[in-house]
Length: 119
Length: 119
Image (cartoon, rainbow over all chains, first blue to last red; front, side, top):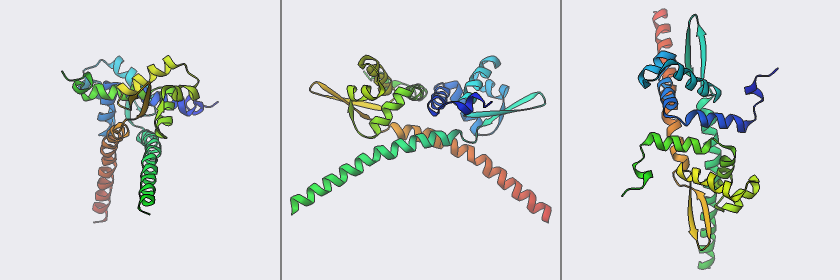
């Protein structure tokens, strides 16, 4: 049976991605993990939050596909998921390209109009 | 007196940005507006949502700095805010750069270790 993540439609995955990033403590964890892997306590301490609260935030970041974790002995280490930033970049790039095309078309239209005026 | 937007700290602005994008209907509006400006009813219709609901979504997108609007006569036109995608791209790019530096350092370390072994 596939995992719930594997069968989730892309829109549900994007919901979880953006929900995960819509909180200052969770973005603080992303900032910390961007500099290298860390344990729960290493992530909780600089934010001044309790471990259970940190674990809840990390669960949302994992559900959003932004971080992944690995248990070695008694320590679970969190790191940035390999595809985390790529998913966000792709989403932005697709919209931005389409949005910029409007201006290219407007520019071409204005150029054509100007050329007609000069004829 | 400055507007609430002007005095909001960057973290609060990022909260609003990601909250605005954490919903399929609102992302649908961003997709539509990426292709060109539109009125509330033009945005509501393809999503199959009522106008009051569409207006609530648009208010969240405006608060997130993703769309802006302009009233001309009786029609309010919505469009993508000029800085919308830039704010997201900057946020991703800063973290990704830091994250990739880890691998560059690891690569340099492995190369140095290999060179020492060969000496």
